[in-house]
Image (cartoon, rainbow, N blue to C red):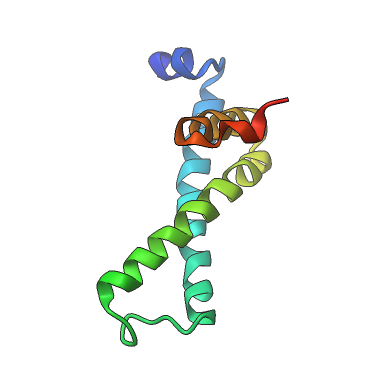
Length: 101
């Protein structure tokens, strides 16, 4: 726990628990949201190739996860941590220009 607190720059054990909860809840939430979106577009594992279906689901889950992570983090009082996490992560993917002032 001490290594995580030091690496993430947090002070309390509650923050670690909250951060881990946010990661797990948001992952489940993103996969839950992706299903009705694929259904809306008429994509089903029986209507298209399973490989293509799961590829589309993954491509949907990824942005949903990134968008909702700071929102879910806010509910646990960890918005600042997750906003910084998103900025760092998206900068590494080449989207750092979105956060330049």
